[in-house]
Image (cartoon, rainbow, N blue to C red; front, side, top):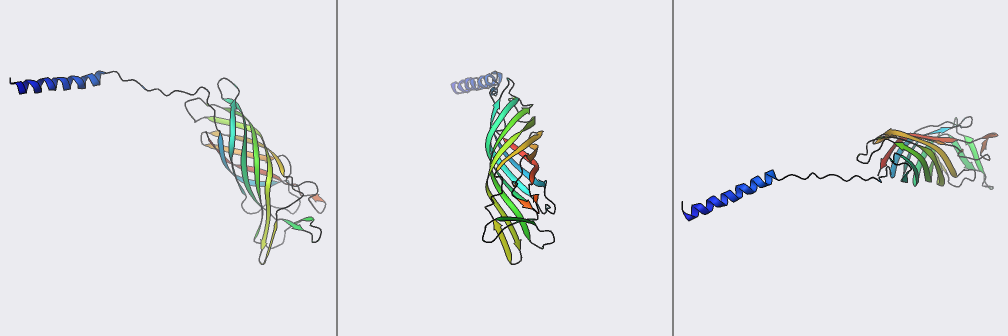
Length: 237
C-alpha cells in the first residue's frame, strides 16, 4: 500500500469514527420552563348584540343594535394553583341602539322632549354611546401553566362613564341630532357573566341602573330603559 493510499485510508477511518460518535452521542432534551407565577386573560375584545329592556309604552327596539368592547384587565390569582383570581381593569365600549324613541328639544327653553315615533315614517332613529369602563371580576378557571386551553367562568360588575352620547333621527328632508341630554345617567353600572372554553366565550351584561333618570318621561311615564348585551368575548394574554 502506497503512502497516498495509506493517507486516504486513515482519513476515511477518522471520518467514519466521527460520524458514529455523533450518532451515539446522547441527545439532550430541551424542556420548556414553566411559569409558576403565570397570569391569564390580560386583554379582552368582545362583540355583542344589544337589547333594550324596561321601555315605556309605545317604545320598541328596531333594526340592528350592537356593541364592540375592548380593554385590559390585571389578573391577580388568589390561590396557590392560580386558577382563582380577581380581575380589575380599564376598557372602552362602543354601542348602538335602534329604537323609536324620539329625543327633541323645546324651542327657547332647551328642555329635552321625549316621545314615541309610533306611526311616524322615518329612515333612521338610533343612539350611539361611548363608555370608559372599569371591570371588576371574580375568576375561576381550569388553567395550568403549560396550556391556554381551559374552561373559565368570570362574573362581576362593570362600572362605566358615558363620555359620548348621540341621538340621531333622520327622515326625508329632516334630521335631528342630540348630544347633550341632561336626563342621561352617564355613570353606568352593570352585572357581567362570562363562560366558555378556550377562544369562544359567551358574555352577558345587564345594566343595573336605567339609561335615563326620573326626569325623562313620556306622558307621566318614566323612560328608564336598561341595556342588555349578549355576545362573545375573546381573551389574550
